[in-house]
Image (cartoon, rainbow, N blue to C red; front, side):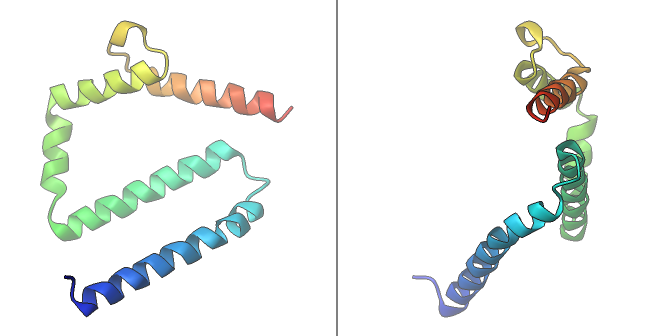
Length: 113
C-alpha cells in the first residue's frame, strides 16, 4: 500500500494536471490569430528544450548522444516518419519531415479558406 506522502504527491500532480487542462481553452482562444503550425512548432521546440534540460539534470544526455550517433537508430526513425508521411515502401527518405509539413500546411490551408 502506498504511503501517505506518495498519495499527497499524486493528488497534487493530478490536481495540477486537471487545472492546466481546464485552462487550455483560454490559452488557445488567446492564440486564435496565430497559425496552427507556428503554435505546434513552438510547443515542439519548448518541449524539446525542457526535456533536454531535465535529462541534463538527471545526467542522461549521454544516452541521447549515443542514440544520435548510432546510424541504425537514426535511419530507423527516419524510415518510420517516411512511412507515416507517404514514403514509398519504407524507404529511408530524409525529406520525409518536409513532406509531412507540406501535407499539414496544404490541409490546414484548405480548411481555412
